[in-house]
Length: 345
Image (cartoon, rainbow, N blue to C red):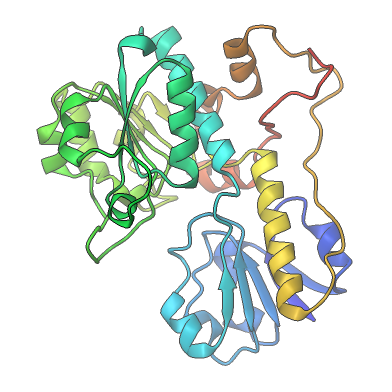
């Protein structure tokens, strides 16, 4: 069995080597039709567009993306071509929640936000948004959730309308997939009209998909004081991001909110499980993330420990110092764990 794999997917090589001796690791954005023509399976991230142009004429019958998002997968073509595909829903939800917790701690410490008298609006409450709601509630914030698809399904709420988010929230954070049509599109759901309706000059956070927030409109909103601050992890037109928006944003990171080692290992295990199930073989091993350095000593204060484990200002400083290195910063991301091992405090 031949498998073509994005070379920036970490921790997966040992497991793959136990499945096949014919694995090819390539830069995700450069995987082309010639690379997959004689492959049986393809394992990618968001930088590989999996569609008819890439896969027509190949023998690929299984595609996995080691990501929550799958707007780079042409699902309609996959169905027509009889190619099974999978994503990894929820794999890095705790990692994104960690990112949001650190941002909220920094808002409290550096920007004077009082959680107990602040309201956060969570737009989209699936795997990630639900964990963010728990984090914010645990910090004493009032939490409003807007998720029309879940509300229409009759899922447990309470849910509010988008205008409630626009009118009442001090922080608004987006956790939705990129949907371009249908009853609940999310493409540019935060557009100029949205920013014009805001009542409280909130902090805007986007860790979902870049095009959920109209980046030009957000820049204008910052310039004209319609929003207080912006925290941006996902951007339109990555890796050619809006440099003026990056400069204006308080925290600007290179699409790494979900990049904890724990989240990556979760995705690897989901991909390996799906691959083995499809081809009828046994899962060779369980992938575990690397441990923190032996000299790591955990802080006693929970907020200090959160920032010790992950401070998004570090990633922001690196991106702002070298925005042309957007892809390199993602591809060579340092070790980040979601928690400290027991006995290391």
